[in-house]
Image 1: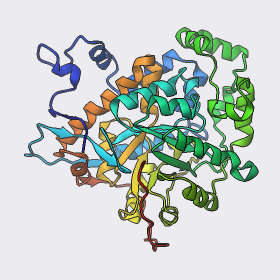
Image 2: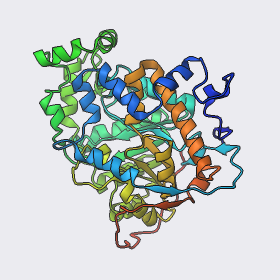
Image 3: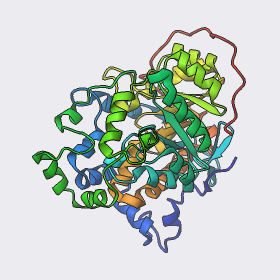
Image 4: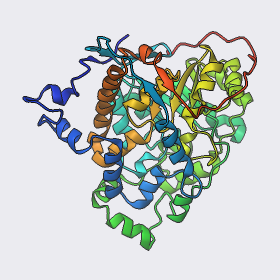
Length: 436
């Protein structure tokens, strides 16, 4: 299995090139960024100072008053403890994983995130290029600001696509998007079931968030306080939902595209529709959002190849359990019949190791990548992938694991795991679909 292999105590590429002692050595641009922004929090704080409040709140916020589920996700992740094992030869650590018949360099990928151009213009393209370079999965959202076709060209070896449903005309556009994703070379298709309705995100309401921007006094003040962001928006334009230009015509403006998405994208991915998509899609199919073993079992019976355990980043239901707390139950239900992934407050290599130790094959991360782009612009994608590479390697070594497989066998303490009664198998597992 291919993947990054290096000395576990290297401290990263920049440190290995340094002439002297200390993890902070190195004078390359990557080394300087590493010193200035060594953590998720440092990147988040830099982004908060650099972009308008309405853009920052759109990414940082969740649903409900104070976005409690975002904080709950983090607290649940921090509660997971890994018992290290010592005396192993961890001078070389392998971080690669094999997912749906393809090799990737790390057990982390870029989660689907909609309208990322609001935080930083061309964020989708920046992250897709970084994922291709780092050889990690890149999952494009239906409501990305760069088209399926363009992202498939930017990240041909690692491109996955996430689908929201458009139920009009018996899901005519849903199936057209599936066909476009296949032609664009997507290696996996994720069907999102955790957004049955549009939720009330109070920060966005209070900020009067809209696309195109409504230039009210408060919005103008926010933009004026973020000059670098404003210059980038002037260069590239306001975020547009490019995947829908085909259906409205090349001359469709930002407002027309936004209105079309708002009025037509209301999910509607029922089990019956998902079964039809399974029949139409020839590659790996992943259910995004199962939090109950019964839903996981039903997906497996329909022939899904993967299950992405997630509560949508705390953005849909205040009372939903944290993703990490239902992960063991979904893994137990899958029993190896489907590949289980985790998305939810994955901020570091340690969080990746926590998820692997609880049975996930790999993870996806959203804000961790997007804050890096918001803080650093074009350099943000590579900075984020380099940080994950370094942290995963060193955490593996620290717990006595020389590979993702060994990390999956680590002893873990998980006090908040949600108990579920076993669910009987609904049907024999279909043969897995290759990744193409």
